[in-house]
Amino acid sequence: AQSVSQHNHHVILSEAASLELGCNYSYGGTVNLFWYVQYPGQHLQLLLKYFSGDPLVKGIKGFEAEFIKSKFSFNLRKPSVQWSDTAEYFCAVNAHRGGATNKLIFGTGTLLAVQP
Amino acid sequence: NAGVTQTPKFQVLKTGQSMTLQCAQDMNHEYMSWYRQDPGMGLRLIHYSVGAGITDQGEVPNGYNVSRSTTEDFPLRLLSAAPSQTSVYFCATWFPGAPDTQYFGPGTRLTVL
Image 1 (cartoon, each protein chain N blue to C red):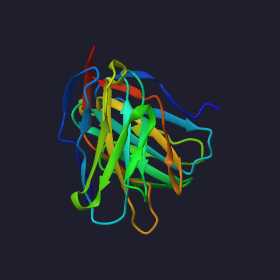
Image 2 (image 1 turned 180 degrees about the vertical axis):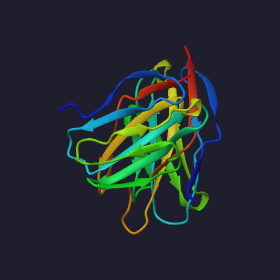
Image 3 (image 1 turned 30 degrees about the horizontal axis):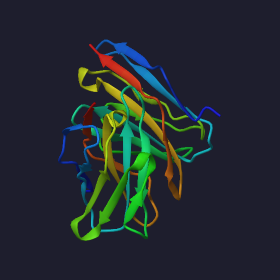
Image 4 (image 1 turned 90 degrees about the horizontal axis):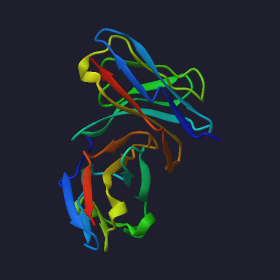
C-alpha cells in the first residue's frame, strides 16, 4: 500500500531562516505529488504540485519542492520564512493505476511555527 | 459560485447517536472524497466517489456510510457515533484528469461524548 512519511512533526524557526520539510513516499509507479498548507482555522490549500517534467517545482508564496525519484522524496523548501508561514504542511501522493487517480494519500503533517 | 460547502461547521453528539455530515459542490466535479483529520495522523481517506451512483472505501471506512445520488452532493453518515469518531471532517472534490484542481471544504468539527 502507498504511504507518505513526513519526518518533521514540529518545526520552530525564526523569521528569515531557511526551511526544508522532508517528505518520502512508498510507491514504485507513477505518482503525482502535492504539498498542501493549512493555516490556523482554515481548510487545506494547494501550495504546489508535481506531475511530470522539471523535478523542481515552484509554488505560491515563494515555496518550491524538488522531486528526487531515486530517493522517493519530495521535499518542500523556502529560502526565507515569514511569520505568516506559520501553519501545518501536508505532503500528499496520488498514485497512478491505469488512470484511477482519485486516491490521495496524505502524510501526517508538519506543524511549522515561525517566531518573529 | 460557492465551491465546496460543508454543514454543519460544529457538532456535538452523544455516543450511539446518528447524524449526517453534508457536502455540496457547485463545480460539476465528478470526484468527491471524505477525509478525517486527527492530530499527528494527517488526513485519512474515509470514502470516495468517482461519480453519481459510484462509491468506494478509503483507508478508514468503518463506522461511516456514503451515497452519491447526485453529482453535487456527497453526504457522510455516522450510524452510531463513537468517541473515536471525534475529529475534523473535510470533503474534497476534483475533476478527473485534473488532480491539481482539488478543492477542500471548510470542514466539520465533530465531538462525540
